[in-house]
Length: 140
Image (cartoon, rainbow, N blue to C red; front, side, top):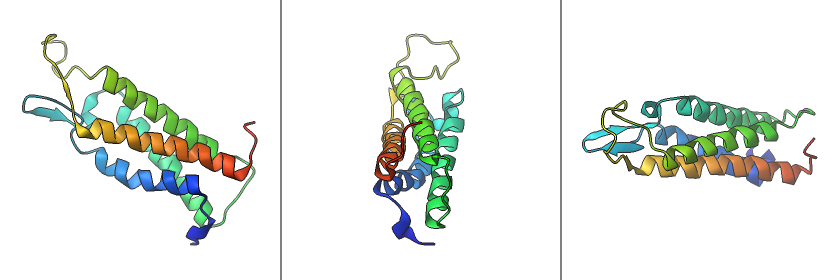
């Protein structure tokens, strides 16, 4: 396992993965005493975050073991990171309805977990994209 094989972008994306894993379980949104983490926001947000973390972990393992092949896996990391970033951004703009439509006038507070999730997913997407530029690979 040789960490010197990692490009800067891969280091950035890989560093965001353990932070995002912890952020999955801290509060993202709250109403009074009720708070939810990434898993409680509804929909597939948690699953998309796990896929982005998994793709980044696979890229990390490929690089440190010295396994290279013609498929540009950096683009998979960039795409999954961008999809996760957009989903978190959407959730920040449009918070989940924690009461199932029962109380329309209740304001849902955004907590630190949601903002940290946005930063981590942005780091995964940017790190994946930066590593494609360092490799000198074409987009297609």
